[in-house]
Image (cartoon, rainbow, N blue to C red):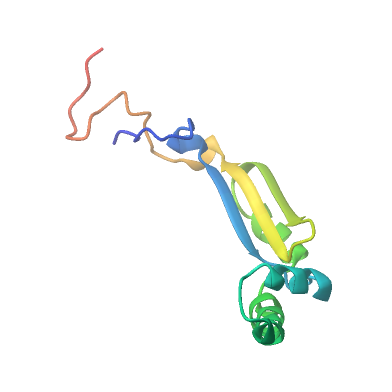
Length: 118
C-alpha cells in the first residue's frame, strides 16, 4: 500500500499525535476564565461554568492519568502536560517507527499489488 502525501511533510510512519482533554484538577479560576471566552448571555455564565466544571472537567482525566496514558503509547518525543491558564491537558508525540509492523514504504508495490519501476 502506498502512503498518501500530506501537507505536513511527515510520512505516515512518523505522523504527529496531539490529544487534548479537559483537566479534572483544573482550578475554579481557570475554568471560569475558559467559560467566559465563549459568547453567551451573561446570565448563562454561571450555569455553563457549573456544567463545565462538574460534568465535563469533573469526569475527565487529570495530569497523572494523562501521563499514564501517554506512557502506554509507542511514541517518540512523548509529552503529557497542562496548558497554562487553561483547564486543558495535552498529550503529544510522534508515532515510533518500530510501532508500524508490516508496513512498506510505498516503493515496493503499488496499490494494485504490482511492483513499481525504478
